[in-house]
Amino acid sequence: LIAVTQWNYNKEIKLVKSDFALLFVIIGLAIPFFWSDSPWRETAYGRYVAILAFWMLVVSTRQFTFSRAQQNLFWAIIVMGVLIQCVVGLFQFFLADEIFFINGHRPAGTFQQVNLYASFIATGLAISIYQLCSQQLERPFKALYCLMLFFAGLLETLVMSRVGLLGCALVVVSFFLLFRQHKKLVLKITLVVILGVLAAILIKTSSESSFRGTKSITTTNARTLIYKMSIKLIKEAPLLGGGLGRFPSLYLEKQAKVLASNSTIALTNTHYQIH
Image (cartoon, rainbow, N blue to C red; front, side, top):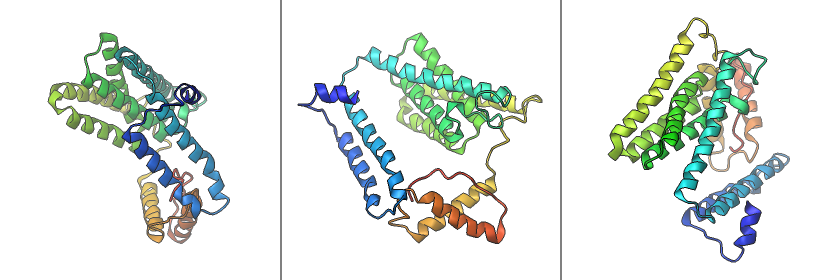
């Protein structure tokens, strides 16, 4: 898509202010390369190239003009993809451990990582609410987006990812403020999401499935330790940080000192690359 766009629009590329703003942010992300140490610096090259490719993709898609019907179909296809992931998550919750990459019956979709999975579902929720509130839709599209609302409440509650729950809450509150002139419609949307949440609670509290989805949930103490260690690292280098790719090793070093003195909590996953 990027190559086709450059071939057809090599004389005149349409750019808007948001394109320049995003490019400015991306250039800012390159600054830590100047003080990051090897070999961690080299591990970030691929990710930075991917960010630049994302910007080029955004600019490329802006060069095409889509009709309202084409836009509706585009967003509907994305939401259908999210719904497929929701179905996969339900299989993971109810079926045996040997099927669908299950980790303790906690849904993670094909992402195999609960926070990414929950964020993806929250994205489907945001698209659905926006489409329902911004225009009059045909019945098939309305049914699709209402189904997404229900499954979002259902799966986010089964997954119990703090990132996903926070994202969904922000989505609902933001759209309530954005479309406050359609309060009744937003309240109906919220009600459908709540029905999904109640369905998940009913499933979790049933005698046959109350054990599911709880095996691998991180403890509150572990999260508290993550926050404490991260705050200490930020205080040690508030401006320049530790450099690109250094957060995992710096975090584990700081954590090891604390665990060696007084703790039995073991953490195996640090998500962030920049400190």
